[in-house]
Structures are given as C-alpha cells and as structure tokens.
Amino acid sequence: MTNRIKEIRNKIGLTQEELAEKVGVRRETIVFLEQGKYNPSLQLAHAVAKVLKTTIDALFKF
Image (tube, rainbow, N blue to C red; front, side):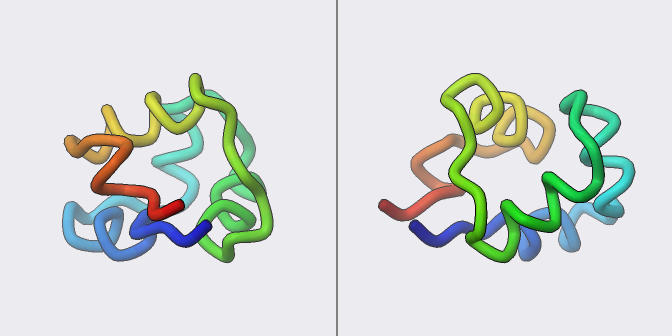
C-alpha cells in the first residue's frame, strides 16, 4: 500500500509532530505510515484523512 500523507501534509504546512498530535499517535507512527512500513487501522486512516482534509481513498492506494 502506498500513500500521499507526506505530500499532503507538506502542502498544508504540518510537521510530523503536529499531525501526530492531532490524530493522537506518536511521531514515529507518522514516520512509519509515510514510509509505508505501517498499515493504519481504519480509525487512524480516517483521522489522518480528516486532519489532512481529504478522503481515505485519495490518501491511500491499495
């Protein structure tokens, strides 16, 4: 699975730390998500998409 988290996060000017705080995870989780080393739960995917003002489908490619 690939994702556009880093791309979209950078576009809206959020750091990994800020995104992590907003979705309630550690920064390392965001790092692993961006690197494709961690597949999020549906709840986390929804939270990330909401903060990044996009949809899960636009954010992740399965």
